[in-house]
Length: 112
Length: 113
Image 1: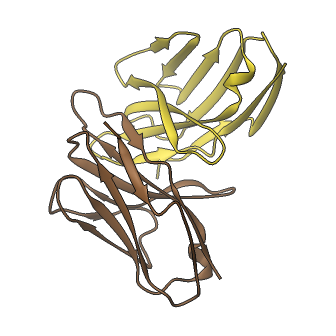
Image 2: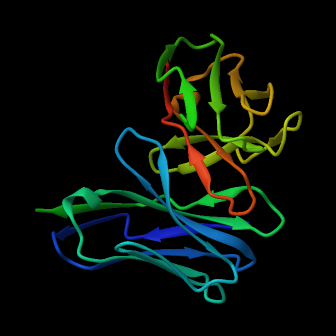
């Protein structure tokens, strides 16, 4: 059974800092991995999707990497801003399945 | 283009009452999903529908039923609500191709007393 772990559960940083969020998964036979953002009381918004054949994806100040063989992904946020404060979740889709398995998220606080 | 919409936004039920959560998407997606989100448990899949007329169980289907009414709508029914079903419920949809990003609705916050 696929398990997705995100460490740390919470992170607080000063504005302007570059930071890395971590995601690990137990079964490397994934189809893709997604990173989502969730603001308090809101739904999830997809940030980046990495296919299993890809190593990384970039969108603006965000860069997500994938190392399938080691079961790890990282989300790099450059020059963090208070508006980046949210919970970040990663989710993996197994090959042959439509289902996503989610981690429990990392709650990020960027202090002005 | 509203994306994924859910009704109601909030609901309070008494134990044993029934209700239906509604979800609709206007992105012409084939796949739709129902999740619940609980503190410390993360997001868990309740049911999903790969296409109109098909539904499959997810990780936590007990106590729920679903209906894929048409391509746009996917409803979740609680026949006899229990306090353990107090949660935030999210509907999502996905096209699967060319890229299967999931799009989420704003959620329904349900309290069962």
